[in-house]
Length: 296
Image (cartoon, rainbow, N blue to C red; front, side):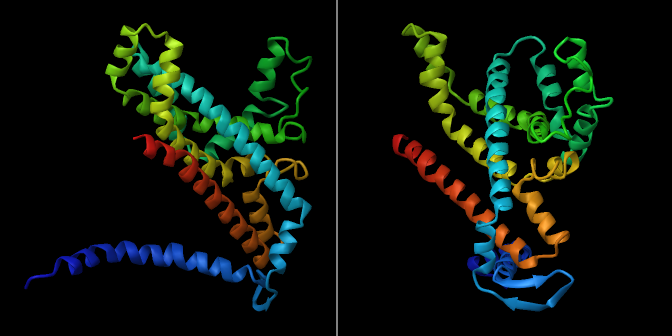
């Protein structure tokens, strides 16, 4: 019995389609639906339709706006530092020198560690009583006392403590992607530039940067979305404290749902969060990828 090509394709697609329907489409539909209701986690049957009240309450909440600002700060410093450090390391490792393979393997080791474990490691390192960070800064004369900086207990340093842990964990990803992009650039372009007498800076500016832009755009987009939804590192290190100084959107939504039991408002926050991420993705697609296609 012969099976038509369309029917065969549908049969192969059906498992993936059912998976997406059950674990992606339905949860999003339920999330949007719950955002229009006022419901308690302990008594979901007593849900009350409130329209856009959850959205207005969320957007007018100073705590939500503070968490949004912390998320923006987290993304800007974490992703920015990861991109710069990753680009420098990728440029250094792109030239095959002796021991470069070993150095590359060592630099990639943080990628093998789960974010939760990474957070625990940095929690011990940043401890103001016995942490190696303060002890090292004290030994080299930067600090007057090994207990001078309370990395996780001082509101001035808490958000940047989580950013440091994120930079250490995910810079290897940025380095790996950028290194692959650099190695994919044709060597003939650099050879032609050398014949024309171009300097190293000119080759970097006029060959490496334009050719690396599509790869860098993808890496930045992935890391921005990943950093925006970060939870493990922040929760393990500070749980959003002290106070709300290091609270990001993911930890605030988690607390709103699990600690305060506000299903509707946490769902509204999640919907707003998804919309913001979609806007960021649309910006990268329209403003960065489209010009590349025009010049291609």
